Image (cartoon, rainbow, N blue to C red; front, side):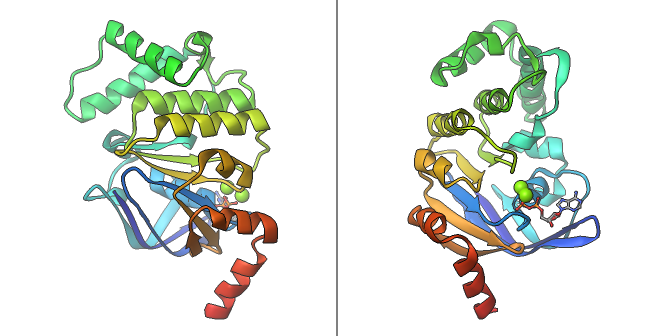
Length: 252
Ligand code: ADP
Ligand code: MG
Ligand code: MG
């Protein structure tokens, strides 16, 4: 589904990604861990086509398309969901309205008919149920006055409604409490499917206890230097990132 080959990227005049390789197949959940400043969020930004990031080498292919050629909206329409896409607060615009607009934009660009209100309501209610989320989420302004946990919950809800082929979740450095972690994990688990891939960026080993990724990768200094199954996350928890970084330096 996704093939990242030798990706180099820079921002603010600084090289951050320095030859990153990663393959994500349909149905797989990949966790990316790594020390602070190693480039995890930069990777998410580059994949979503966020402004201010320049790709200087390498390629990213997504279902046969050159992802880097696509505008951010085209990437979303192609089925790439980045949680960071919607952290904005839009007071006065309710969630339902916002989601329907996003869903219809996606449908239009695929040449599909827009969803009518009855069908849309059925869809969102079904998703709320699957995720055990409260109905009042629909009526609230987009992220306005949301706590960290509520934003996460909303993010998962948006993801469920937009049904992406590839979901990229960057759990940022700001402290997520245990409830928010659970929410993210439960959401990912509920939306796992043979057609859908996930990239879950986190430095919380705990999140991976709940999600149980198929693969764990360690990003150090702009490259993936170690990959393994989820036992790797446990080793990192027990021994830190130092040993991986040292091995990486010894190999270089
Ligand atoms: P991580 O998510 O792994 O903590 P980031 O991708 O956020 O790492 O950051 C990698 C490096 O790039 C850091 O040194 C950070 O300071 C720098 N960086 C990231 N985004 C910007 C930006 N917009 N402007 C300046 N420096 C940035
Ligand atoms: Mg960081
Ligand atoms: Mg980050």
